[in-house]
Length: 161
Image 1 (spheres, rainbow, N blue to C red):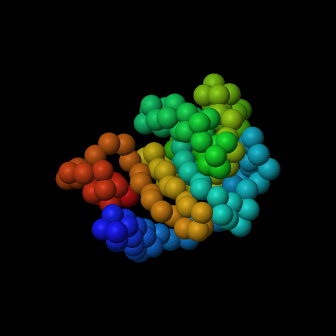
Image 2: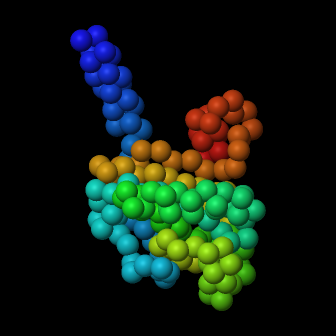
């Protein structure tokens, strides 16, 4: 009986923490879609979604890309939806041929929104967010490693964003 009470208590605390940190998924803005027809927040409702903002020349993204591709391969059969959002940091990153070559070279197969309308450098750090089945963002972080003054992964997320 004590184990059941403990599990219920832990579950209630975890749910309240997630509820207080969660926000709605904003619309996915894209000038063009690759590997998928256009996706919307409404179409993704009820799914667990990992949104990965990236730029094909970003060394931080290049280093983390194998993990995102592995998660897509391993967990897509169980319902995970990985959505890449290419947001160029430099003017040459807006060239369609360069973006398409980057997608081919990095062997990306998940849906990708091409967002060339963003101001250059608007997303100069690797950014990720996870949306849960309640259509809320359960976790979001940006940056590479620990931000200045951060002592934990959570404080790194706060400091970096």
